[in-house]
Length: 446
Image 1 (cartoon, rainbow, N blue to C red):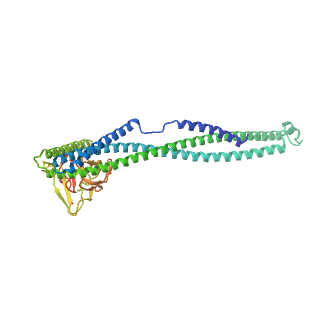
Image 2: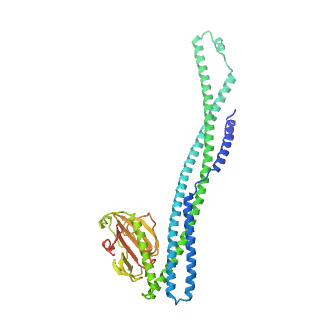
Image 3: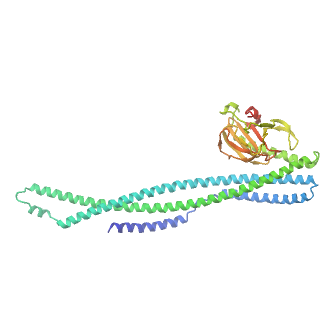
């Protein structure tokens, strides 16, 4: 049987194995989002739908009351309910986006793993192909050498030991015969080695071809799984885009409603029941927000809060020459509710205009908060170690994400007037083990 026949026979057998392998692979379930993860997303979507129904119903009431704007108390009360609805929807959207981002990260990790596996298989295929080529060349060389040897035997004919002995010249001694016999045996041994080497190389070639076909099948499976994961990643990214779009829309609606509600708080008589209700709602929202902040900061670093513990110290978030303090740390009358209470940070503005100004990290650290709330609007929290956390609130745009490391002076946001705010400014807080302290004890204005 020729080498070609042997190789072809191996290929047919391997093709059958490949078909069976692909049929089996087709029945294997490719990695997907777990049932519990999907249940979370479905539950968030259900909550969003329920909140949207509340928002739509409240909007109907608002539209009706707008026609009779004289009834300011009822109108302002309805605005407060709608503000709560939007804040609840925003909270659900933020949690949903976090879950989607987490699932996206898992999918991306699997894609990266598959990329590495595909690259490794491709390298093995390349090495295998090179070895097949070397083996085929060696087989061709040995086969050619063996053919030459067969031609030589055919031309010269086979000489028996007796013929060699009878053909000896009388002048030659018996030792010559022994030499000739040894040479003949060596040639026979060499012929046997050639045949064995040829058989071994043919066996090796069959094995290499089998490995090649197996690797080709494996890489096709990996590529199919890779494409499936890429498609799944695209779907998650689109879900995140849709959720962020809805989040941004809800945040804009919330800002508009807040501004309108603040206006009515000022217009309503301080003795009215609706005024008191709005103030109570406002204060309750602030309290709930503070509790949420405390929960997050409880997971931050702990320490003595020594200002010198952070290399490079602290700088003021607004690094502009015309910056000024618009509201200091300490007790004051709340500009919205009129309640006398602690203002836990320092508000600063720029004489040249504050909106859109760069808000910079006061010191190096890790971002632990980067989100939106009706109280602080778009706000950022940074853990600097040793129990020190800084907060930057009421921004128009956020420029960092949770888990990100920042250096001193990095732009973390751009100033604005979102949340409970009466104008564009940077609300800057310093918290030591969760307790708010005077920021001007840590940083000075430029």
